[in-house]
Structures are given as structure tokens and as C-alpha cells.
Amino acid sequence: MQSQLEDEQERLLTWLGNKLQLPHTDKTGLCNRAWKILDAWGLPSMPLYHPLGNKSSAQLSEMAVSMALLDLSYAPDVVRHMQESFPKQGMVQIRKDIIARKFTPWPSMSSGPSGNPASVDDDFSSLGGGSSV
Image (tube, rainbow, N blue to C red; front, side):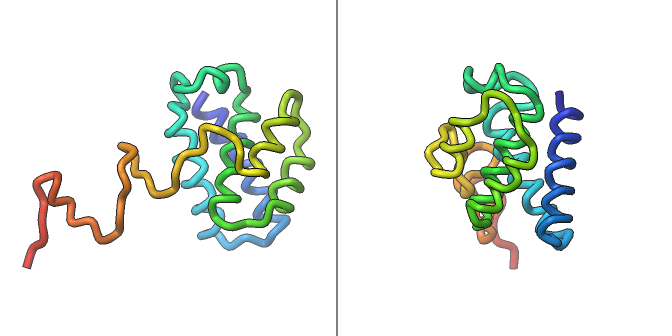
């Protein structure tokens, strides 16, 4: 499933890159955020949220990329245009909920892989590390 998710994400991100003339760094940021969303959902292995279990790789990738776009302050119209360019069955309400930011679960951007807030200034002292002088 991971390679299918990667392929679908690459297809969407390539389309966005061409349509919006995205710099490589923006495309990379979108890809990273989409993977953080998928990871928070327990994918590509067993989904943590039952309703996601019946979604295809194409649907899951679109959901994650759509949420990543909104998280990174892209306009809802960009998300809508991408969604309309790749029609999929069973996504009408999910797409509406994502655009309205009502879809759940919507992973927080401030959470690290463990679900705890992470900061650039974190000295990781809670993990035994600390400031070095």
C-alpha cells in the first residue's frame, strides 16, 4: 500500500506543481505534511480510524494532500480545483468536510510523531539530552 500511496501523492503533487508553478521546497513541504497526516491515521499499515479502512490509496492520498494544502495556507479554491481534476467515487461529503475543515480526524500540525507538541527550540532534555555549552 505504501508504494500506491507514494504514486498517488506524486501524481497529485506533480499536477499541483505544474498548475501552481510550485517551487520544489513547497512541493516537498506538502509531501511531508501529507505523510504526517497519513502516519497519524496509522497508514500505510492498519488504519487507526475504521472509516478510513475502506478508502483506496487514491482517495487517502487526495484526502491527505487536500488537508496538507489547507494546513499550509493554500486557498480552498486550490484544493477544490485539484479535487475536481481527479474525480473519485464516494468522496463528495469527505471533500466538503475537508474544505470546511470539519473532517475528522484532522491531525494537528504541532504534533510530532508521538503526538506530543514539538518545537524547533526543544532541547530534548526530557529525553536525557540538554543544552551543551
